[in-house]
Image (cartoon, rainbow, N blue to C red):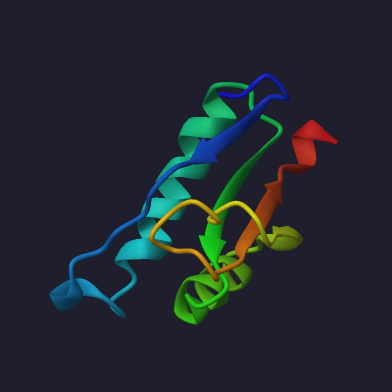
Length: 94
């Protein structure tokens, strides 16, 4: 858990053979359960602007777009991509 009482999802990968079968949604639900048990106020995560399926998944699961960073990947192999940040706020944390 981060200093601001938000849990952070660093990476969410689902093997291609298991995509579009609800696995990512189940993983997000388990992450939420864990975060709530830890007293988090919500969850945040980051993806790239080119990862439209991930953005749709997060929005479908209640995450809200909260910001972008056009320089985060400047010195990385992902240069030219934009970091997109999403938050899921828990009612209990408001």
